[in-house]
Amino acid sequence: MTENLSKKTKMADFSSVAMIPGNSKYEMASSRMTEIYRTEYDTRSPFERDEHRILHCTAYRRMKNKTQVFFATENDHICTRIEHVTHVASIAETIAKNLNLNAELVNAIAIGHDLGHAPFGHHGEFILNELVQRLGICVRFWHEGNSLNFVDNIELLPDYKGYSRNLNLTYAVRDGIVCHCGEVNEKNIKPREEFFNLVDIQYASHVMPFTYEGCVVKLSDTIAYLSRDIEDALIYNILTEQQMKEIEHIIQKAFPRERLNEVGPKVLTYYFIRDLCQNSTPEEGLKFTDNAFETMRLIKEYNTENICGHARLQPFKRYATVVLETIFEKLDLYFCDDILSAMNAEIKLYPTLLEYFKGWLIRYTDICPEERAKQKLDNKIVYDYKSHLMYRKAIIHFISAMTDRFAIKVFNEIISFH
Image 1 (tube, rainbow, N blue to C red):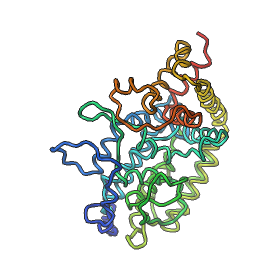
Image 2: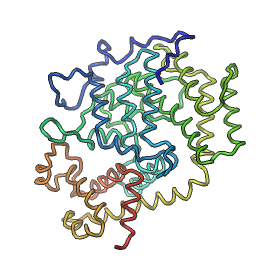
Image 3: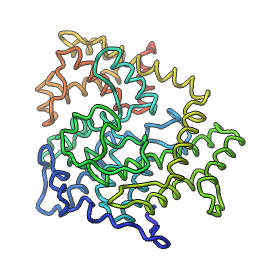
Image 4: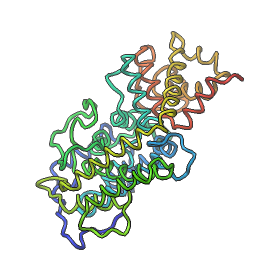
């Protein structure tokens, strides 16, 4: 989706605020926590390198089996999270190119923005948040914060000597990921000026992104899911004919001067992009018209009530709750003075669950230094396995890394008798 929208209406030029060399914030935006390995023939920009590092990491691959509204679907045409981030990247790139922003930075943020999302969509996030709050593990579980945790601490890539190291992404990409929350409640947004430790951000939409490119992804996230959720609902016959007429009425009211050959969810994407590009300026920020912003609000409310809250989803929500809570409770039982021995004693009963969780502890704790050396792990130690609180946090992050399919697989392993 890279159509030039400026053929009929001249777009504002954001090149003076694009995150490129010469921007007063560029040095901070392109900075890393630790330098990453490079070769003398590598000519990529910092943000292009980040995009490629994300593309090669495990969490990115797993998104193809993480779903959005409809969980663990067997229908090949229902949106998966990897399809969603591709949609976001496409929309964000279109906006960036029309406004002369940095498309490489936009793409890196977009494809990485949901790396830390829980299985079973937003309901999975709700379940893990309930767990961490009930057990006092942390203040909250929110997927934007967990995505930052994943790119900072969890995802690893081998260097040219075979040692697994952290991704060490640039500040601008990390910032765009943690600030991407698509619940947009403002008609126009501008990036913040402050440069601070991103780990200090406490909750979704706490602050605006540091760059205009991050702001573009934030808005693109909303544009992408609004229309796609409707399409998925149509595939599953969630919406009645009368409800579809109500959606069509909202769209027609939003664009009364347009002659639409098709009034449906796909047309929303184009018109939101066009409205944003035609009404944004570097001085006022990224801006929707009142009409488009009100339409976005109405569609969002409509989807929440009629799709996300549909009665057909309730049984699976209860099932997903049982699945994730059972996995957590089972792994929590192994906390003791000798965790590995406790797991080894039952590994024949739960081979998949315990082998994978043992691997998780070896990668992110110092529970077995010899095995870390053997596996050539040279990443951060994330958890103190001797602390029950940190052990539980390791379980939460381990579960959040699962796909819908894998969570169901290990749940079935737990409840089965062999």
